[in-house]
Amino acid sequence: MFDVDAAPLPGASGTGLSAADVRALAHDLVAGARRSDHSLTDAEKVDLLAALEELKSAAAATQAHLTAAFEESQLAEQEAAGVPASRRGRGIGHQVALARRESPRRGGQHLGLAKALMEMPCTLRALERGLLSEWRATLVVRESACLSLEDRMRLDAELAADSGRLEGWGDGRIVAQAKRIAARLDPASMVARARRAAAERHVSIRPAPDTMAWVGALLPVAEGVAVYASLKAAADTARAAGDVRGKGQVMADTLVQRVTGRSADEPVPVTVDLVMTDRALLRGDNEPAHLPGYGTVPAQWARDLVEAAVATTGRSAAGVQAWCRRLFTAPGTGKLISMESRARRFPAGLATFVDLRDQTCRTPWCDAPIAHRDHPWSWAGGGPTTAQNAQGLCEACNHAKQAPGWRARTVAGPRHTVETVTPTGHHYRSTAPPPPGTPPGEHLVPYEIDDNLPPVPEQLPAVG
Image (cartoon, rainbow, N blue to C red; front, top):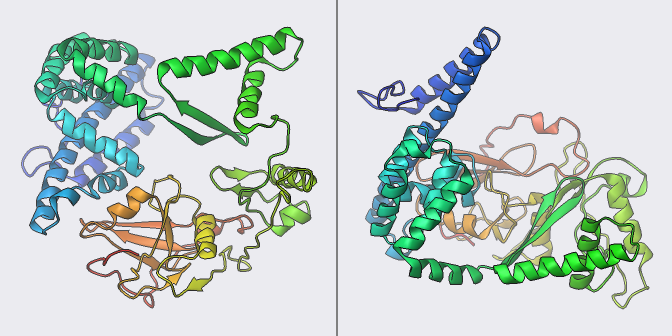
C-alpha cells in the first residue's frame, strides 16, 4: 500500500513540494512505464496499476490541502483589498477550475470538497492512503453535507477512523453506510434535506451521440415513478395492440407527444439557428453543420431537417417554419465577419452573432450555455461594443471575472481569441470554435499577441 508519510513525493521535505517536482515525477512515471511495458510480468503490471491508483488518491488529497489553503489566502487578500464580505470568495472556484482544466461548476465542487475534507480528517486520511478515491470521498462528503460540524465529524470518525474497513467497498455501500449514520445522528436534518431537494426539481438537456439528445427531469420520487409508470403503461398497451416499435421507442414517442402536443414523426419547426455553409445547404457538400445547444451534425441530417421544415410551411397555424439567416466568413480563414454598435448593451443582432460564433461559454473548459455577452476590454474603460470586443459567457463566469485582479483582452489569433489573466497572474486563452466551412488544419495555425491591440489593463473596470 502506498503511504504518503513513508514515501513522500520528491521535494516534499526541505523547501516543500513544487510544481516542477510534480511535473518531473509525472515525466519519470510516463517514461518508466514506456520502458517497462513489456519487461514486467503480468503480476507486476497489476501491482503497478494498484500503486498508481493509490498515487492518484494521494494526489487528490494533496490538491484538497492546496485548494483549502488557496481559498484562505485569497479570502484574506480580498478582505485586505476592501471587497465587501458579501462578495468575498467570488472567482476562487473559477481559478481552481482553470488550474485543473475543469468547468467552473466542477471547480466549485472541488473547492467545496476541499473545505469539507479539512473538517473530516479520517476521510481525508483514507484518501491520502489510497483507500478512498476522490469520487468516493466526494460521496461521503455529499451525504454528510446536511449535518452540523459536530455531527459531520462524528460520521467521519465512525465511517473512516478504521480506514482498513473501507477496503473493497463500492460506491453504493459507502453511500448507504454514510446515509445510515447521518439518519441516526440527525434524522430531522435528513427530512429537511429531502424537502429542500423537491425545490430543486428541474428539466435538463445534454447532447448524445448520433444527433440524439438526453432530456432528463429531476423530480420528487413519487412524481418520477408516476411519470415512468404512465409511459410504461402506454408502451405495454401499444405493444399488446400490435405496435411494432420497441418498448423504449413507444415510451419516448409518447413522451414527445404528451409534452409537445404533436406526434413524434411530425417535422420539427426550424426555430433554432442551424449553422451550415451555402455549399452544404444548396450543393450537397458534406461539410458538417453546427446546431447550437447540441454541436456538430452531419450535412445530410441538417438538409433533411431544413427540407422537412420547409415542407410544412403553410400547413400549420404557425405559418413559415424555416428562416435563413446569412452569416458570412472571410475567404480562406473561416473568420466570421462582424458588425458593431455604439451601445453598451449588445443589440439583438450582434448578440445573436456572438452566440453563434462562440457556441458556449468562452471560459476554457466551461461548456455552459451563454447567458451574458461580455466586453473583454470593458465598455467603462473605453472598449467598443463590437463582435471583436465581445465574448459569450455563462452567468457564473461573467460574475467571477468581476472580482479584483481579473483582466482580459482580445489577442490576435486564427479566429476570435481572448486572453484572460487571473489574480495570481496565470494567463489562459480561449479561441472561438471553427464554424462550418473552416479550411482543414486551420486550428494548427500559430498565433501571437498583436501589439496593436489595447494592453491588458492592470485593473479590470466594471464589465458592461
